[in-house]
Image (tube, rainbow, N blue to C red):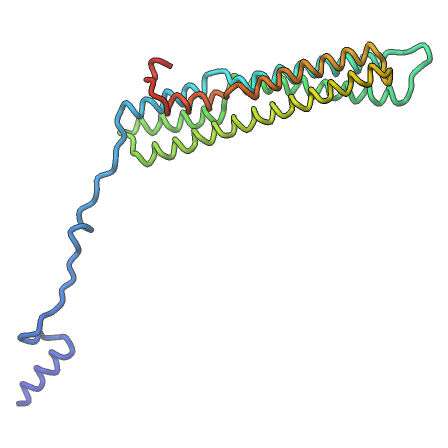
Length: 238
């Protein structure tokens, strides 16, 4: 009896199995042990994305090009104003002319620098270049995963969104230039400002407005690349 009681005590503590009592055994589910294979991108789709990124990187960016032209033209007119205001007059210098002339000269210098930078950005797209190089490095490692392609698509859409935002800002700037040109023309007609200066500045402002407004209707390289990537045409037809 004592031996039987000891066996029952050990069974209650889990040391011995109890006959007739089923023990729960934890086994991993078959769905957990079987790992799903990663989803791979077809080679044609991977090549399509690479071609789109290359287009966004190496094609001239029209809005940036137009912005550079606008800055350069504005700088030319700023230079004209600076020279006109700083040239000695028969009645001598006026303080307001000197202040405005120096301001126009500084503005012209800044605009020349800005135009050079924008022309360079129209030719070189550092963000698109970095994305293209990263994507190509991933392709060299082996087949492309679908998750990595989706990440690249999101980044390309972000580049296109930034390009669209820039050209909309340029378009709004163009509208503002048209308003300024009309105001200058009115002041010139009322002889509130010198006629020769007013005509030149009003004409230049209107020209700048035309250039800026043209950017409103010109898609950036990233926008074009995204449209072609999502379109039906093959990269060879781009």
